[in-house]
Length: 112
Length: 112
Image 1 (cartoon, rainbow over the protein chains, first blue to last red):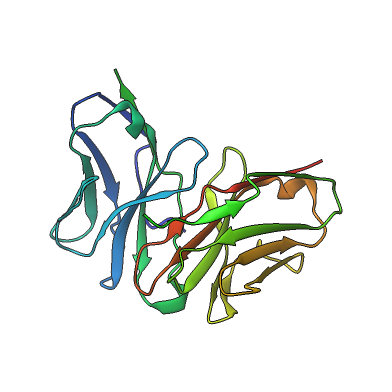
Image 2 (cartoon, one colour; image 1 turned 45 degrees about the horizontal axis):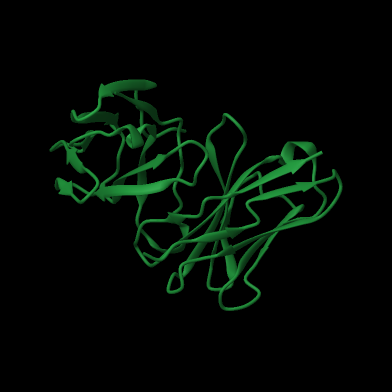
């Protein structure tokens, strides 16, 4: 019942931008797009989320297409420490039942 | 920055024994979650907890599992009689109303 699809893996060079795509063609109007990452076996780490406008914070930028059917997470200057599994998740933001459902994510490898 | 803390980091137990995994959520958060991740597999939702009761649980969360918030700061997951297949990383998370989930770094449970 995956609601997002992501490539299995990608790599990029250290210092370059990493653009991670995600498709969520069945997203509902009340669902937000969330991005998390998991470095090795640590707990998932929140990166960013958005509804329909592009968002930017100190970690990344999130670009959501106008039809909201896909999005791209941008790490502007990837470092070796950004090597991780990145999860794109759609989440209804209402009260007590707003859990996150993780898929397999995309493994980003940053090479020196 | 406030964080979710989990103890112990690693728990080894024998099959059939009871284990209690402990979590201290972020202090002003209202929603609490447990997830697990079997080695090499996806992060799976177990249960969410709000207002001193379970708000949602997955099929994994059977009668062997229970959660409790025994005081104002701790949130615990109890496995009554552990099985070999309960070996996994267990992650606790917490969130405020309509805010991202923040995860701890997990407890690695090994059942022998």
